[in-house]
Amino acid sequence: MHDMNVYDYDRLLERAMDSLPENVVVKERFEMPKGVIFYEGNTTVLRNLADIASKVNREMDQIFKYLLRELGTAGEIDGERAVFQGKIPQTKVQERIERYVNRYVLCRECGRPDTKLIKKNRTLMLKCEACGAIHPVGSKRKKE
Ligand SMILES: [Zn+2]
Image (cartoon, rainbow, N blue to C red; front, top):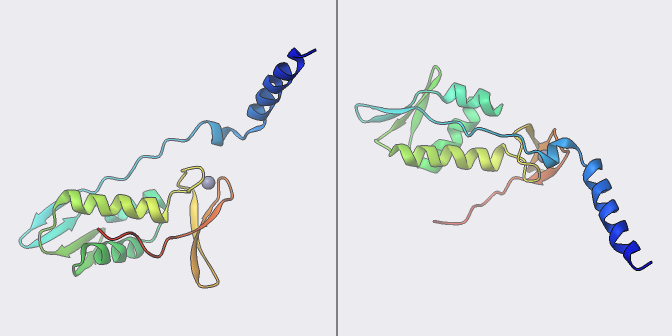
C-alpha cells in the first residue's frame, strides 16, 4: 500500500500536465524584430520602423518616442523610417528596440507578443490576450 502515494503523485502530475493549455507548455516562438539601420550624412536612419511597429502591433509613434528618449537624441519620422540626429551605433539602436519589445510587448508570464497596453489608475499596464496576465509596465529601469 505504500507504493500507492508514488503512483498517485505520478498520475496527478500527468493529469496536471494534460490540463495545461497548449500555449503554456509549447512556447510560441517570437522573432525579435531586427532594425535595418544605415547612415545618411550625420543622421542615423532606421529604415523599417513601420515594419517593426506592425510586427509588434504598436504605434510607430510610440516606438519612435521611446527610441528618441532612450537614445537621447532628436529626430523625426519620415514615411516608414525613423531618422535620428547623429551617428548612433547599430548595436545600440537594436538593443533599444529589443528593450522596448521586452518591456512593452512581450507578456511576462507566457512570453507571447499578443498583448495590449492599457491604463489603470494612470499606470500603464501590459495585458496579455493569450494568457490573460496583467502586469504594470516598469516606469523605471535600472541605471547603466
Ligand atoms: Zn501571456
